Image 1 (tube, chains in turn green, cyan):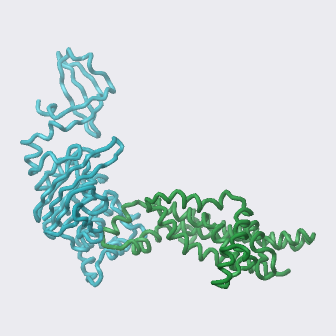
Image 2 (cartoon, rainbow over the protein chains, first blue to last red):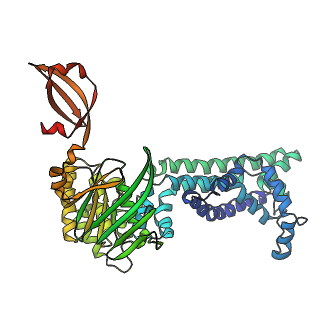
Image 3 (cartoon, rainbow over the protein chains, first blue to last red):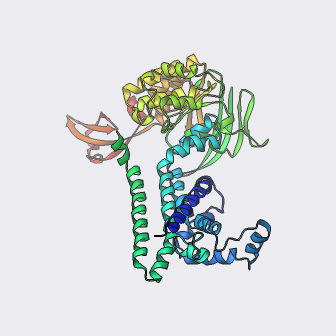
Length: 223
Length: 285
C-alpha cells in the first residue's frame, strides 16, 4: 500500500491546525469584544463554510488562484506563488474551510468567561495581551482543545475543496480522501478499504480523546 | 481626595435611567453607597474604576484627573490606582491562591508582600489551592487580599458580603475594618445592609433613581433623616389569628416572621398568602 496519501493528509491537517490556532485566536477575541458594525458580517463569513457545499468554495478558490485571473496572476508574478494544484494552495483552502471549527469553540469559550475576570486583571494593571495570555486562554483550555481537534479532524475529512483546487497529483495534492475515490474509480476496493479503515480508526480515536478529556474521564483516571 | 461628578444614561431591565452622581470623599473616609437595586450604585463604582464609559463629567483623585469629558481625558483602568473587590470575587480559576496574588504583584515588588497579606487573612494553609476548592468566605478573603497587593490608596467593594452567611459576614466585616485602618485606605462599599453600613462606614451616600439624595454619617441617615420612611419591605401573610377585638397578622419577610396587630374591622382587607408592602411607619407604632 502506498502510504504517501495518508502522510500528506496528516501533514496538511497539522499545518492547517497550527495556522488556524494563530488566526482564530485573535479573530475570536475580536468577535467577542468588538462592537463594530462589521461584526455580524465577519461572523457570517466565518460560518459560511459550515453551510456551503465544499465544491462552491473550491470552485471560487480555483478561479481566484488561477494564473488566468487577476489575483492568481499577481500572486504568480510578484510572489512567485502558484496556488492551484499545489500543497500551499491546499493549506490556504483548508484554513478557510475549517475556520468555523476553530473560531466558534474559542469564541464560545471566551464569551462564556465571566467579564469580571478580564476586568479584575485590568484593574490589577495588566494589559489586554497579558490578560488574554495569562487569564483568558488558560481558562478556555477545553474550548481550545475542541477547536484544535475538530479542525484537525475536519481537515482530514476534506474532499470537495481538495479535489477542486488540488486535483490528484501524487505526493503533492493526493490526500487520503482523494486516494480512496481514485482507488474506487479503478475498482481497487481492497486499497480503498485500507485507506478508509485507517481514516475511520484514527478519526474515531481523535474524537474519543476530546470527549474523554472534556468529559473529565482522563482526570478521573489519573487521580 | 476623590471628587466625582458624572452623568450617564443607563439602560436597564426597568427601562432607562439618568445617572447623575456627585461625590466628595476625604482621605480615610469609609463611604457606603446605599440604595435599592438598579439605582446605579455598581455603575458608579465601575465608572470610578474605568470599567464603564462615562457620558459627561469629571473624576479627580488626589488632584489627578482620571476622567474629564471636556478635556477628553480618560485614564484606562490599568492606570487608575485602586483595588476592586467584585461581587463574584473574580478570582482566576486557573491560578492557586498564591498565584492569584502573585499575578497582582507589580514588577520588582517583593513577594514578601504576598506572604504578609496571606498571613493577614489567615489563608496560609490554603495558598496552594485553586479558588474552586475554597468556601465563599475564603474566596472573599483571597479577593480582598489580592485587591491590596498593589497597595492602592483606594479600595472599592461591590456588595462583597452579599452571598455569605451571617457568621462569616461578621468576621469579614471585622477584617475589612482592620484593613481600612491599617492601610489608611479610602474605601467605598456598595451595600444595602443597614447593620453592615452602621458598623463600617463613616459616610453614607443614599442614591435614589440615579441621584444622590443624602450624604451624611450612617447614624444620621438611618435615624434622624429617616431613610426608613422610604424603605419598603415586601412580605407575605402566613397566618391570621383573631385575638379579642384585634386581628394578629404573621408576616414573613425573607427569613423573618413578624407579627402585627390590626383592628378587627379591617378583617376583610387581609387574607392568607396575600403579598403586602410594609413601609417605615410600620416600625414606629
